Length: 458
Ligand code: SAM
Image (cartoon, rainbow, N blue to C red):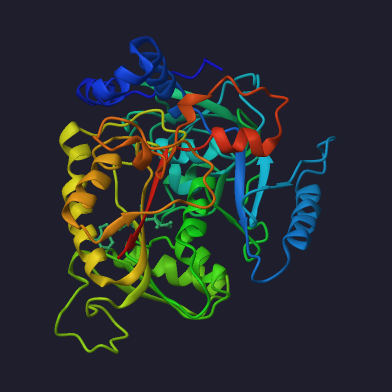
């Protein structure tokens, strides 16, 4: 599994992360050798995609078994040439999840015609997507629709759009068929749209979900689906999702409430807020009300207690999800991050401001779930320790389901507190889980890096 490089980070960021994973508390419990092994494994597994694809089924629209059957039928149509039927397996602990295996890295012969795509596009290809024209940066002068091409991901964002070739730091992600001529991608005067390269031999093979049963299945990482269940919304409740776009978790919350009650979704960026509305509409969820709003300002003592729009008076919500903006260092695959340490450290103060608003907006007895898709202590366990010190009304709660590991030592939390936290740590078992193990077993350990804490306001 090692022909991909480890994630490339700025040296200052690598040193910082090393300090996190080799902190004194952790060294005292597992020792230097084990801590070093976890850290090096983390850097390697971050640059690879997880070994399964997870989709959340719209069980408010049809039973899981029926959705699974329809999905298998659709996949058969799309993959006619494939001899073996694709596995689609329900998750035994998460009732609305279906898992599909990812086959890779496979041995794929590189071709002479090369297309270079942006890193985000390259990462999507490694998770089963085709190449969309806006993600294309370079392609040969005479590339025509129908040409077989090799696709490379530009790791450092150095390839200029419209280039003929690029030989900077790049990684091969598979072969495909060009669906457009070069001229229609770069020279038509209008931004190119649609599929630019249809992947036929991806390095990691798993179905593309573009346009596949869009109302019935929603691509979502397993830990993100777990968050909705941990929050535990019930029909008729009033829920706030403070940082909601593109709305994957908002829609899940509304689904779990069988579309009965109120789900208020706030998002600071207006274009992104529109995505929440589009997703809610597509999934036929009417109880979602999305607003473009800065959640740090979402509390007002002077608001009408019946306020339907932000800002809201204190103690307005039964449950609150704070899926915080974060440094995103748990995302997979991620072959390179150019972020500075200053940028990475800029999230913790914002998360604390959001936390202040969340605690005020929560009713007494209500539930607050805090989550991030990053691996630092500062944005995870240290935020929990800070929150427990700052808001004596908050008590940590057990989580259901609890699939990930417990919280990581290093923030001064007691062992019984760490047990209540859920940290998805792919580095703990990466490369050790047998390929013969069941798909749910592999899916549980080989996830993105993710963190969940659940509190109740007493
Ligand atoms: N919960 C989302 C989902 O599952 O689809 C993902 C949320 S993402 C981790 C964080 C989001 O918070 C981003 O879309 C970002 O624009 C938004 N955001 C950042 N600061 C915010 C603020 N002060 N108020 C509201 N939204 C904010």
